[in-house]
Image (tube, rainbow, N blue to C red; front, side, top):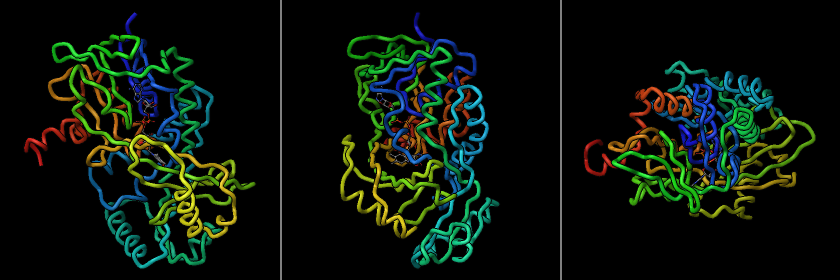
Length: 378
Ligand SMILES: Cc1cc2nc3c(=O)[nH]c(=O)nc-3n(C[C@H](O)[C@H](O)[C@H](O)COP(=O)(O)OP(=O)(O)OC[C@H]3O[C@@H](n4cnc5c(N)ncnc54)[C@H](O)[C@@H]3O)c2cc1C
């Protein structure tokens, strides 16, 4: 029997959309995944849920990141209940450290706008920062504390989403690379792999960095999404040394409950080549040592890379193409796909089931690039 909904791509976005649709009552859902579910960008991420730490201004993108962060406590509790998997939502908060004059200026700028906007943020002196995190460098000149910027163990999140699919009869087809969406009379009716054809009432495209490689009927996908490589290294300590996620302007460290410390990340334009380079390992170690000099003596125990999905303006792409029905796109989450997964899933499910069009979908419409190029929007 044909599925009601076909989801292409089994990363955090595709699997979260599958979960949300299932909870809304859809029973025949098929996920087509070119490799294995949850082994691409979503696996490589650091799991930070930090809308405030990196934001220099408010606006609609900031609003969706905050709204999605607020969904996490319930999302985590429900997943634990439904799958038995604890995604390790960690609410210690995030510290942002200043070392240089430029860092100090940035900290003040960020503090000013976020306080004005009524957001939870505290300014810490160097002494207070070191009281909060005793292992950070004595060179620190001050810090911001974002109590509501959290983290999750994204690999456990993927395990929970996979488990949810498994126990609820969501049909997952791995090693099924979609080459083409089938279009009939401006309506998407399904998708083709090299060996199979799948028909469905609705199709959702959640293919991350690979989205532009899929054909829309006989035409190219009218959307440019590019891979931006990120590398992370990890150190292992016997017990957890840091409570907070800790940023500087040059990178971040993320302490996990099992004593691992992640240090990330690079931003590289290397096409679809996932690779771990010595140059990145050296740079990430230096970055981490600036935050906490003790880290320079630890061996790197793990090193990986992933491909972030990046659209031309760095913002997510959510919703439908004008003039093409029964297709919803959910891609280009770039640096924030883990953070944005619960809200993206809700927006996509509402769009598919109720045809609702909240302002977020208008702001992140896949048509915004096409319209811009013909001068219809600025
Ligand atoms: C180093 C690094 C650190 C990051 N840190 C964070 C962080 O701290 N917080 C945060 O929120 N985000 C972070 N991100 C970003 C986050 O990982 C991504 O935004 C998110 O994973 C995107 O999810 P996705 O499901 O769209 O993509 P993916 O996880 O890449 O999933 C897309 C899936 O689609 C499949 N696919 C592609 N083409 C096809 C096809 N033709 N047919 C079938 N299947 C197909 C792929 O195999 C893949 O499994 C980080 C990313 C990197 C690389």
